[in-house]
Image (cartoon, rainbow, N blue to C red; front, side):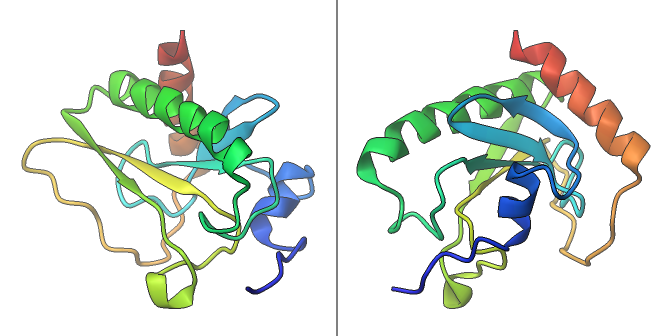
Length: 140
């Protein structure tokens, strides 16, 4: 198994070395807006445990992390007024993973609206902030 890289972008975000538009944070997880969203309200949820993927995650940490994924997903759906959700989690390069810190993509979905292709296009910070505010308000 490949070692965890403490200099990956999400580890840097957790340490406060890189900025992020935060939606939720506690002792277990951090949720923030994806800067290259595939749709309005696209959020990433990462655990504070240093793990590359789901197979590296300590079993005792996985349950509490998934509770946070569920909590954030509910707020994303409600806050964005979505019809549904798509959750994505990729493992290793051949599985589509790009950042090697376990994370879930939470994508709000609306009937008849396809996901945008992943183009590398960065969203305007003010748009991310507006979406984050809606989601935080729905967090309750």
